[in-house]
Every structure is written in structure tokens, then in C-alpha cells.
Amino acid sequence: MPNANLLVPGTGGITLEDADGNDVGWPVLMRLKGVIRGVQGKSDEELVELLGMDHRPGQLAPVKTSLQPNVSLHPGRVLRVAYNQLQRDVNQFLYDWRADLRHSAGQLLDFLRDRKPEGGRWNLVGHSQGGLLIILASKLLEEEDEFSRYVASATLVAAPAAGTLNAAEAILVGDNAGARLAPVMRRTIRMWPAIYQMLPMWPAVVDADEEPVADEHQLTDTGGWPGVEGIQEDLLLRAREAHSLLRDPLSFMEEVDVRFFWAENRETRTAIRRPTSGPLGWEPVRIEKGDTLVPFATTLRTIGTEHGPRVSRFPAPCEPHAYLCCDDGVISRVRGRFE
Image (tube, rainbow, N blue to C red; front, side, top):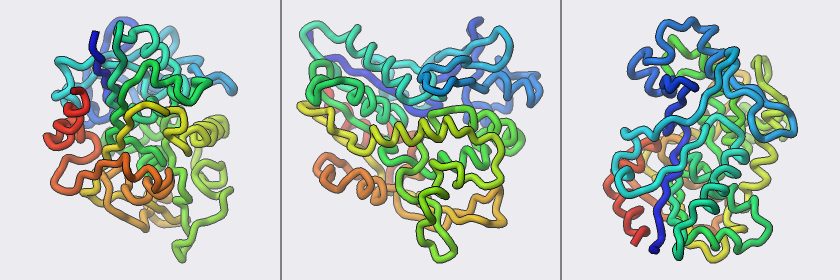
């Protein structure tokens, strides 16, 4: 049997459902439609309970996937709007994109092992957070070349391999579901380990002279969140632990054909300054070219420029981060790696 292809979608690229099959959607759908089946008619407090999570320190799996009594949420379906060119002949890995990245990576590794094509291996496409899961899945193995028993190639499209300042913006502002739901999303997002684990690995908080502040005031430490309620030390610890695994991203991918696909076509934030008069302390002060979420040069510099030969750069014109898997130029290169 030939190799099989598998898509690992990004943050929000998979809907969430309750046990009755009600679709509770994701923030962008909430913004586009206002309310959808599963959230219609709920108060702000009910939405916080519905979308909130509970974790126990030292345990990767969530204790609760919803804070509403007798309710649990699970992955529903992949959103066609972001992956309509990877639907018909590509398998899909579904996961809860709110959860600890290492928990989801463990589920991915089980999937790769249990469903490995007979006589073949997997060609993986990881978009955004999905790319991080692929990296972390390889790190769960004992041998540096063990991942290659299951995986022939990995194409990491717009993977925030060094994090993204947009994760901090989501925690601080929470307006990706629209202004009305921003207070709700701020409270819920602060319960999602994956968002913390995608905070920047580089020193993104700077002083008035745009010099990096001390480590204890960076975003993976409690000192990086003065006056912000609901920041959990356990989730910051999870961020630091995940970052330690992501810093050398390809060290357990020997014999796997890995490529990073990054865009360098739109303004992308790389630093913030505090204190400020901006919303909840959010004041971007440094911008470079990227895909609106992943800054190209900063990411490559942080993970190591020795990975440059594995990088494919997509300048303008091409789609922004969320829709790079719909971009004709990107998707043609992805499909070329399936052959």
C-alpha cells in the first residue's frame, strides 16, 4: 500500500461539539454568524462555563472539557473554509485545540501508530498549531529516528515554531469573536493551555527603549501579566515545558523529509511594551513581515538559521495565516510533496 496523507489542522480549524452533537463552533464562526446552534440564547456566564476547561497540575489531559455541569466537549469536524483543497483525498486528525499541546500530540502519535498504512507511511501536513503537534509527537519517542517508522514527510505550514505574539493578544484582548464577546473570550481563553504554549519563545516584552525586559517579566512568567486576572501559574509552567521541547524542533525527526512553509507577506507583530494606555496593556511596538501571526525572520532566528534549507518562503501575494492551506501556490507545493 502506498503512503497515506494526513492533515493536522490548526487552532480553531476543528469545530467543538457536545455529547448531543450540538456544534458550539469556534470564535471566528461566532464572529461571522453572531450566534450559532449550540450557543444561541446563552448568557455570557453560560458561554464561559461552556467553553472553559479545568486542568490538574501534572496531568496533561483536561479534567473537564467544559465547566457546565454534565457537559463535555469533543472535536467535531474540520472546517471546509480553511481546508477546502485538502478534503477529498486527505485523512484528517481531529483534536481539541484548546488542550495541552502535549496531550494532543500523544493522541496524534497513537493515531499514526494505530492507523499506519500497511506497507507505507504517512505524509503529514500540519497547519499552524497542527505543525506543533507533529513536532511534539516526534519528541514523545525514545529514539531520534523512531518517528520515521511511521512518517515519510512532514510539511509544516505556518507553524508557530517559536510561538506568536497573537497568543498574548488573545489572552489580553480576546476580541477574535467580536467586540461583544471579547470579555467572554478573555475569561475562557485564559483556561486553555494551548494558547499559553504558543506564547513567544523570544523576549517579546520590551521597555521604553525597546530593549527586552528581564526574563521574570516576559510572557511565560507571572511577572509578564501585571494586573491581568485569571492567568494560571500552572498554564504558564506548561508553556515553559512545551517550549523546552519545541526549541530544537527537528531533533527527533531523523530520516523524515521535513519542510517549513512560511509566508512573508504581511505585517506581523513581534514585540509589546508595558505599561501602556492601550487596551489591557496591549501596545505593539515592533513589526516585521510574516503571515499576520508567524513572524518570518524572528521565527527562523529563534529556532536556528541552520534550518534554512528546509524552509520554503512565500512572499506576497498569498493568503494570510488562517487561509494558507487555501492558497493556490502553497497548496500546489503541499500536493507536490504527496507524490
